[in-house]
Every structure is written in structure tokens, then in C-alpha cells.
Length: 200
Ligand SMILES: [Zn+2]
View 1: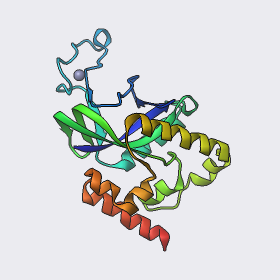
View 2: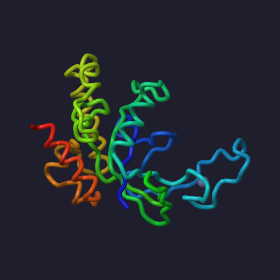
View 3: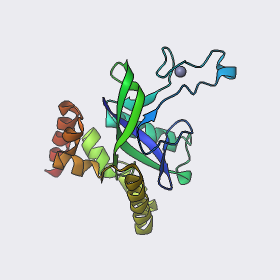
């Protein structure tokens, strides 16, 4: 299965969003990260365990990832100066627990693609929500050309480390990259419609 994800990039490494776990450059095997002494229950023998949150999470909708990143950063739950938020795609296989219309937890996972868009980029608003970026103007005030270049070169290092494509989400839609990677047609078509609506 293919899912959308957030990572935190540090140097050329991708860290999980919510836990301190560095993704390896090849296929990864999940283990239960439950804090056993505090949660009052045993760690799962293997991930994804039942009634747990372990395993590699992938979400069906990129909008869910972007909303979460924006929420976590604006509430201060995560400090973006310590890392770079990265939206990307993962593949999950082995045992996979499906979580309704939210996404899945997989036993095994690998990074498949990273997107170059910054989390506050206006193009994401257009593609994912079909609206002009409300955040764009504010974010633009803080974004210098030097920072933009630094961000791009870090992402290039990430893409090289993991051996995956680096592309903007808009480009990926335009070039048909998402379909090639196995993203469901309905998700891609919605973005395509939003993109065209924005171009008019
Ligand atoms: Zn678990």
C-alpha cells in the first residue's frame, strides 16, 4: 500500500514525525515503541499490534498530513527550527492494519518519494484544498531566498540518501508521477481538478 507521510528532516536523515526514529535508507521493519512501564501494558510482540499505534503510519490523504503539520507547528507541539518538515510517500507491506478512511499501519515500510514543497507553500493550498493560500503571504515574509536554497539542498541530500525522487507536488501531479507510484486515481484527480481551477 502507498501512503502519505510527514517526516522531520535533520541533515540528510528522515525522522518520524511523532517519535524519535530515523528511517533507514532501505526497507524498514517496525517494532512497537509503546512506553511499557507508563502505559501499563506490554509492548506488542510484532508491529502493527492490535489496539496500539505501532507500525509505520501512512495516510490516504495528503491534506491530512499538511493540516497536521501546520497544526503541530502553529501550536508549538513541534519546533520547526530544529528540523525541516517534509511531506512524502511511503510504501507499506507485510502485515498491514487498515484504519478506516484515515490510513494504515504497516509492518514494513520504505520511503518512496519526497516532495519539495514547504508545509506553508501556497501551491499546497491550491492542490489540496482548492483555495488560494491563506498562509502564503505571512510565510513569505519569513522566507528568504537563502533559506529557500538551504531547504532545497537539504532535500536533495535526503533524496540522494534514500534513493528516491524529489519533486514538487504540483509537478508530480502534472507529470503523472503519483499514478506511477501507485497513488489512487481519485486522490490524484482531485488535485488535478484543484490545480486547473487555480490556473484559470
Ligand atoms: Zn504496539
